[in-house]
Length: 173
Image (cartoon, rainbow, N blue to C red; front, top):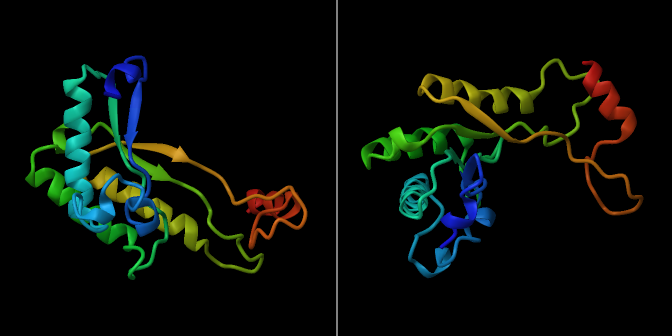
């Protein structure tokens, strides 16, 4: 049903951060058992359905996989980015959709402000890990999010959000 309305779109990203239970639960029926719990295998099957539906509806643009949440830990509510990536890619190859994927989605957000005395930037390392995985798997990367958490409004409760001053300092580093 959606494919005809996307006929002019050059590319479509299928879902967002499926390695987070919060995002996965937004899939219709995810908690009712039709798609199962958050897992890389379930995302690959969802991706296959999305590709099939788009193609059936006449969509001819590029297909982008969902960008994963960078720096997600392993736990009940999330799965580590590299582990999730490797597993869903293996499943995508197994079910025959790897060749229909044009780009790997990537979120290059810096999720926390970088301490001024930090020797390395963990967030950039984890983000570039996705790029390395994608390139090693033979797919280019499409950046679908970029930036810092930012809060211009006073007293909104944003924790570790960027300010003009520390964002400028981070950009210089």
